[in-house]
Length: 538
Ligand code: NOJ
Image (cartoon, rainbow, N blue to C red; front, side):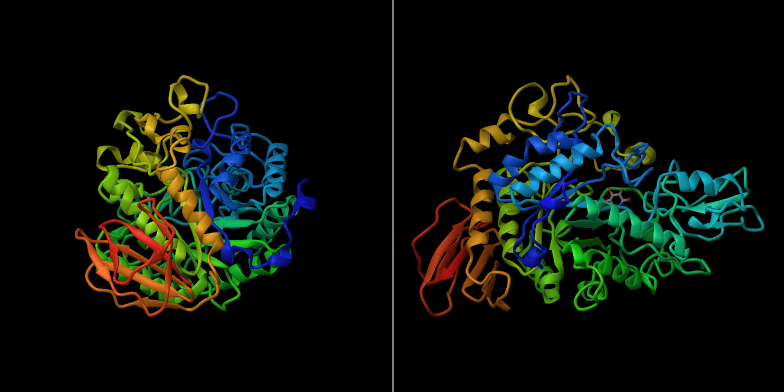
């Protein structure tokens, strides 16, 4: 076990200066030639991640699973799916990561299990089974229909009838992902043990899936029709989720108590809890973090949705930055179209995504890159008949699904992209060009990869970063700018060349997305469209 290699909890909260990196395990690096990424594959790439300047990894689920939702349907929380390796592989990965000063977060999935989990098999076997109450079972309505009008995030009703026992089970996602019943105390106890299991092995914390849906209203009332737009489910997914106001199925009172319970458990290990909370309103997010003794951080998804438009970007970042250090900033993930594509594709999309990264990386909170973002990757090409995401497979041609952001990481030009020695991977390679690959970009100091690497280095070296008060600067036109102590960050999010007066004093250019850097900055600061700079007071 890797416990003895644990990095010192005394440095807590270590995440104040950390930069996270999401590894979509299936598509990161395949060590055994079966076309699917695995834990030894990640281990082989640790040097790259360390070179890039990453210090925290979030590994997407590696547990045994029938993979109806690519591992977000867990059949056993205390083991590794053989596709991904073994517990020994996990220990070795952790030990090597820790040696390089890299921490590792495990993806915890407490809202639902797989239908193949032992608890569900038991629960389903009879109405009086000891595990029956681990899940949410209800009698059909008088007409035989489901107990209420709730819908699944992935489309269709949130209930499936079990013919054998004559009751419906609840699932906010696929029917193969039955929701656990967190009103049942034994479920909370089971999860205490699961958290302890990974913390004792040396894990440095958890990314917590759907951390806001665990509890449901005990009376399971119908949800009323939606009154406003809902942006919960990933873009492009045909879903009825947005037709209802989610008053009774998510964000129920008592959630914070569960998060606090986990915090008490994780704190002695110096472990980080980052929750996935599907709230668009940052003020509402603070009920789960900031001074609540609940989660340490929560992801905030707005930057994965915003248009490339200065007012929208300024407003979005400024509101969420009132949450101080509690935000985990992301502009991409395995659930959303890649930022470079959303922002216009090609050079333009890449430049915009990098400029947004500069803005996010200077803010209080912890930024996470999604694998391949550092290469400026666009969506991979996946034809409808090649789709693997259960969402698009089920919803048919109307749903784009999430495969485009999940295609294999391009490590080097040529067959298999250095991702796999197999002819085919679990998803198509996505139409990557040589210039997209790590090898080609690593050899070119002007590449997007080198620009990200320099950005991460500059962030690490910023004076008083992480502690100073944030002040948004009134800037003309399309420049979005803020100051934190000795640091000033500015991005031109418009179409025209812009200038901005610098606050009094001497400023040094520490970072420029266009590649140049160093030397005194002169006021007014001039910024080309889609570029960003970091200045430091001399
Ligand atoms: C959020 C995960 O990121 C997503 O991939 C998954 O499908 C759902 N939660 C359900 O677990």
